[in-house]
Image (cartoon, rainbow, N blue to C red; front, side):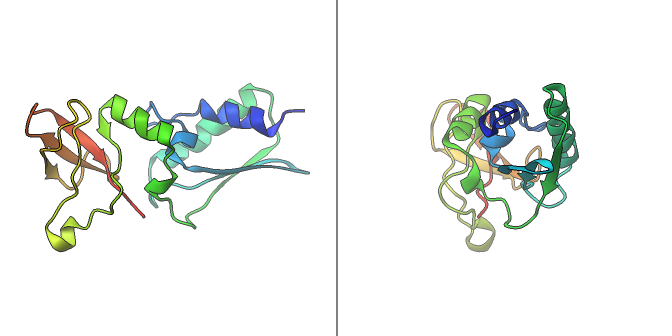
Length: 161
């Protein structure tokens, strides 16, 4: 009999296909794991509705569980409550920064409304003199920035609440 902790450890090995340094737990899209009479129930929430990575993530969860002898499970994908960057773990934020993506800052980006973008430190040199190049980076949940000190371009994981 497999335990919940063992299931959680297996799911720690399932990575986000767009940011492979983050597990689905780090990213906060793994919402719940529960044992029922019919097997395990895995609840996940996409970072945004229509996220193309969700199909791959569901397939990877199934593959991981089956390859480790867990055959009775259901994967539920839910849009409610909506995912928020508050769900990214502190370890996930550290991994993002080490990977070269600035983690979300503590404020929601309201620059579209007030023309004042958030202060986003450069993940390479830590300077705060950075500039948004594009509201959308390599994926819709990221913006593209450039450090004005070391001149490195980088993605910023937008703060969503």
